[in-house]
Image (cartoon, rainbow, N blue to C red; front, side, top):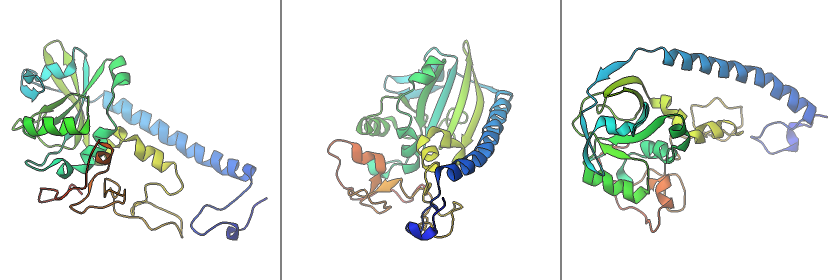
Length: 257
């Protein structure tokens, strides 16, 4: 038996019996399956893209000093690289919150490794600054500085890029940016399953839903966990670091958003 909208607070889904809910759920499932099949077709098209050869001996700088880009494959055939934006001279709290959001979700690549795929992070920062940031964040994935290097090793940051190795030859196979990188951030997919979604203004919500906020509003917060883009805030994952304190300044001239 269906209840009236007045039985629950405003801004919430209507209350129905289980059979009515299941019927609506089944109807949505048809669309979800079509969406999944469309995604499969796109993945198939990606696998049919041509590739670009580049010099795999190009040196990048990591924890062991300068190494050839081919080392990032760690002996495997395939490689996924996240290109992390960087602000020279900025303190830890001033580094890119969007990239921090993505890389925080990518701290273990055991399942990738099991399929013959390695993972690494590159950035344009100077290695001494990068190493300090990596240590502060507690990252265990390999990071490298690609400062002053051209595409596809360096170039524009904020991308997810894939590579293939054939012996001593290296090839660029795919790259995406913007919302194309959301596959690296499962929190977005989980939030999309909830009644209120991501809580962002661009979302299509029913009338009466909580008012959305700007995109990426959760990427930075103050010491109490309140979303904030002020100079005393930090990228949200930084508050999990031992002994972290409120910031004094972002130490940079612009925000990623």
